[in-house]
Length: 63
Image (cartoon, rainbow, N blue to C red):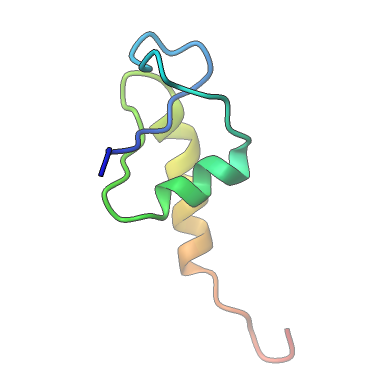
């Protein structure tokens, strides 16, 4: 299985097989085991806090 690494648009570290993803698709990819966000661009800085927030969200009573 090929490892996935979401990158920011225009990242010099993206492979030549990279394809554009919307934010939701990038977050879905990051939620899969073995996927890491690129640290050579702002993908990790941008996407990981959003992903962490979603993982800690728990609906309250009545939600």
